[in-house]
Amino acid sequence: MTFTQKLTFADYLALEDTGIEGRAELIEGELIALPPESRINTEIATFVFSSLLAIAIHYLLKLYSCEVQTPVLEPRDAANRYPALVLIREEHRALCDRRMTITLEMPPPLWVMEVVSPGKTNRDRDYIRKRAQYAAVGIPEYVIVDPEEQAVLVLRLEQGEYIEAGRYTSECPLQSPTFPALNLTAAQILSAGQ
Image (tube, rainbow, N blue to C red; front, side):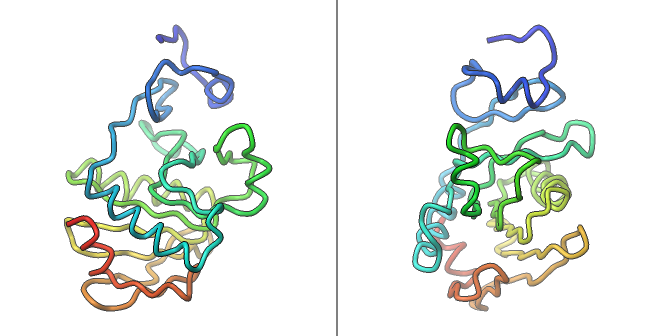
C-alpha cells in the first residue's frame, strides 16, 4: 500500500491495514518495514523474558509485541519503536485493549530492553537515538544487551537523562533498579544467543 501524503502518528494509528507485513516504523511520515529479528537477538530476549517470569507478572511483560511512540528528536528518528522486551504498567492493559501501542499521552513503560544487532547503524540507533528517545518518553530504566561487546548496560533515568547504573560483563550479577530480585549475570544472558 502506497500513501500519497506523509502520515502523522495519528494517521498511522488510525490505519486498519498498513500494507506492510510485520512491524514498521514511521520515519519522516513514511512507514518503513522492519526486518525480522536475528536468531541471536530473539534467543537472548526470550531467555531474559523467561527469567523475568519468576519475578514479574507475566501479562505485563511484552516480548517484541509492544510499540512505544517516541518523540522525533533528530531527522530520521522513528516516531515509534518496538523494544525487544517491555515491562508495561497495569493501567496500560486497559489503555491498550485495541492496540498494544503506548502513546506519548500515556504513562511510560516501566522498563525496556534492546538487544544490539551488528553494525554501526544499529549500534548508534540503540546506544544514541533510542537512548535519547526513551529518556524523553520518561522510561525509568533502559537495558542494552550487546552481544558484540559481550556486555549488558543498565541505564537509570535521572532528571530526564540516562545515567549508567552499571556495565556488566562475565559473571557479575546485574543490578536492576526495576528488578532487584533479578539473579542473572551478563554471561548467562549473552550465552543464551550462542
